Amino acid sequence: MVNYYIALKTKGSVILAGPGDLDKMSLARGLAEVLVGQPSLQWSLVQAHPWWSTRTGAPGHFVMAHARFSNLKLLDVIEGALGSEAAGLPLAFFVGVERMSPAEVLCYFCDLPNDRLWRADGSILHISIPKNIYITGTLDVEEKCGMMSTTRGEHGPGITIQLRHEDVAPPVGAGRRVEPRPDWQARFVRSAVRNGDQARAKLAQILSDDCAPLDPLDELERRLGVGSFSLSVCEEAWLYLANAFDVDGHGLFVEPALENVSIAQDYALVQSVLPHVITGRLESSMVRSDEVKEYLGPRFPRAYAWIERLSRRNLNVPARRRAQSGSTNAEVGLGPAAARQTAN
Image (cartoon, rainbow, N blue to C red; front, side):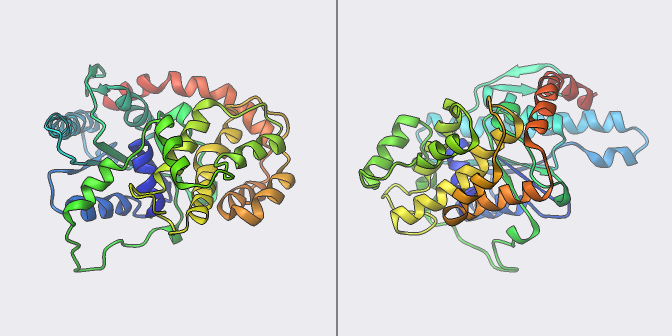
């Protein structure tokens, strides 16, 4: 839950990927319940693709009707968030998009954050998306398939969190309600750091001078044989690390600053850095997994486990990179077309 909380503050949009029988949306629903209460006009759940429509006699008709209804719900949320923002109120509006198709991932996590809302008829509505809207989408990925190689380059500015069955538990006990404290929502909104310079300034006030937050990236560059990670990768790491501390400089994972930043570095490696190696977004030679694991093992158990699962799948990373580089443009190019096909 802490990782999800930080990721949502960092980018405003998060993809929860995992097995189809896993209630991934419980994380989003639970956080919204704690921050804004339930039921609340600040929480809206949208069923993405109407998979049930195939069991009807007129799937095209129901898909179109469902798309129109989803658009209306989103427009209601956007209107409320814009009004709150204009009034200077620290209110957060949460949207859950459940069981997305690959085309809908592009629509909600690439186009929508860039102020493009797809209509049911395949046209685009250009609309300003306020910063106080937080979108969480779920994507069914079979556990046996391992890591999902979604990145910001393919799916917009969101962070992808891989979930397994042991990762999700009901955040609120059965029959128990959590009453939000008045300051929780305001602290969530006002503590979010979305600017790289602000992130570096915040960390400089918290960490000692001899602590270099992005040292793990420098070491991985050397061991992976890459020239350098892109600016967007580094910026996302800075933002995640800064958002791992509250407005008073207290760690969100654990209280001690150095231990907290180490845990945050581990998550940032898994969610923002290592996926770029798999998808071939960087000019890289051969990935030397043994050297990488030797470095990650003692300090970053989550990143080590990520590489270990990759090794167990016997993936040849350079070959995967070539396959991805040959298909990525096609995937991105087919995004709007696929969205129109979904709508039609």
